[in-house]
Amino acid sequence: MAHLRTLAKAYYHAKTFLLTQGFCEEIDWQYDVSLDRLLVQDFLSEAAWVILNSGMRESIIRKLFPNFLRLFDNFQSTQWIIDNKEECRTNALNIFSHKGKIEAILVMIAFVNENGFEYTRDCIRSRGVEFISTFPYFGNATSFHLAKNIGLSIGKPDRHLQRVAKLLGYEDMQKLCLDISELTDEPIPVVDLVIWRYATIKYQRIEQFSRIYLKLNTFEGNA
Image 1 (cartoon, helix red, strand yellow):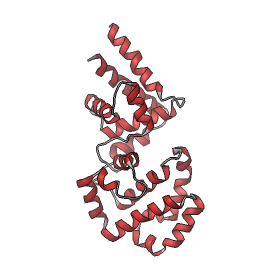
Image 2: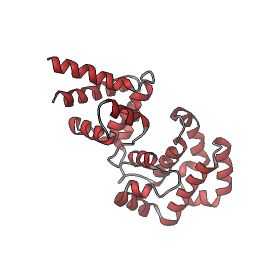
Image 3: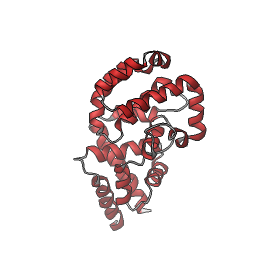
Image 4: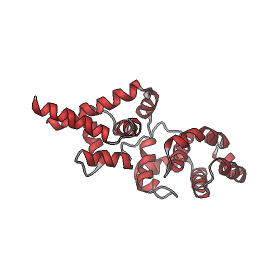
């Protein structure tokens, strides 16, 4: 049981550090995300965020994303975007010059506009990651990323989480997040966010979380 106790302690250590560094709003956002309360503009915004972030540094996308959202009128109306698709495409490419990603975002907008958001949400609820992965630019990691960001109880298997899981002796980062969630009663998406954010800002050292765990585990074992 020392292993599980120290895993929970390491998680709380990382979360406390993030709270002291001003990440309260980001963590609170993840607590509040719910598929049932999700609005169409939230869904399309998160989808665009995930697509643009694929293979990019999050800090770069964060700087340009507010202007990107304004070009699409914050996704308030899918019909308006479809009616002004060429202008939206051109303006978007002026901010983010990647035709494939811009087209992928427009494909999702067109799907929601044609089928309605309630149908889209029902498909997500019933099929989850399998449904998300039918859209362009949504492979394994990006599908899980969007699923987490719109309220599904799941983590995203990106390189940071996978590395931390491996260092802690886990073959699967989902099992790591599940264990911490069960130990702490924290939602899996929040656990994912805390470990991921900590791994990316703590001196850019992914190993830091595992080092805290190993240090605490040694202490527990000698107690």
